[in-house]
Amino acid sequence: MPAYESPEHLAERPTTRAAAAAPPAVSSLGLRKSYGDKVVLDGIDLDIPEGTVFALLGPNGAGKTTTVEILTTLVAADAGEARVAGHDLAERPEGVRGAIGVTGQFAAVDHLLTAEENLLLMADLHHLPRPEGRRRAAGLLRRFELSEAARMPASALSGGMRRKLDLAMTLVGDPRILFLDEPTTGLDPRSRRTMWEIIRGLVTDDGITVFLTTQYLEEADRLADRIAVLDQGRLVAEGTADELKRLIPGGHIRLRFPDLAALDSAARHFAGAARDPEELTLRVPGDGGIPSLRAVLAVLDGAELRAESLTVHTPDLDDVFLTLTGHGTPGTTTEMTR
View 1 (cartoon, rainbow, N blue to C red):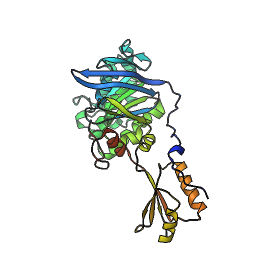
View 2 (view 1 turned 90 degrees about the vertical axis):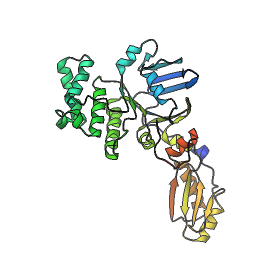
View 3 (view 1 turned 180 degrees about the vertical axis):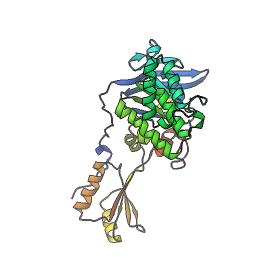
View 4 (view 1 turned 60 degrees about the horizontal axis):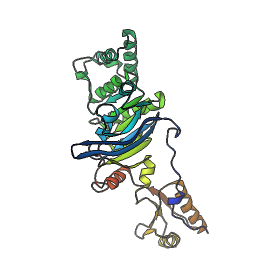
């Protein structure tokens, strides 16, 4: 009969949605920034492959906005180095600006202009020839399903439509790297999911790299290939969503048995499992990965035990965030502030 083994050393490292060998779109080493005596960033190292979504999470005042401001050349770092789209941030800031697009937390559209005029204004600011500007504007209106609203003033658009227009305006310059600062703030759930589809399409269809800051943990879980947690100016964890969830204790496999005799028998085969005689369930510690499930099933088969049901419970990003940053109690909120 096989013995049950703790799954930690058996866990397979999850595979990211993007190729691990992709060259970095954004990299930094030892970025530091202070304002007076206040240390905002205390040595930030990043390595973000091309064609991926990278999410930066952190509580209010963690340094997320400062990180974005430095990488987009709006603020100079006090120390460290960084490269964006192959350009050294300090030596070639103009090259960085030519390769990036930035969408802020609030839609930066001109409410007096129509949707089409907003896009044409961006084309003029990018010094595009008039025919090319009109071609890009028409293409973006179609892509973002704004063609019917092209002649409507931006003030008449819904919040979701204005956010789509704002993102479309950022894309007029054909950026290789897109910085999105809380892109779905204030949107209803349907509009938020539409934006998620658009953002993921920019990566999978166009190969754009997305640097995302968000207050919605579900957003990072759905979109990001890799997630970094920033707290008090330092990166306290980085990995895929699954990798980060595995850092937090509390994951388990829940087995339900048909009667008390079967439960008692199973409990003897799983060291450290929590037994609930009223619910006829056994909670076996595990990370929820395939090796964990295989180990549990092997024990059940070897002992000729039958479970009526098996469910996997793993910590979510709320638990990861709250545990790593030490703010609050897991399960108390589904959002966090900037």
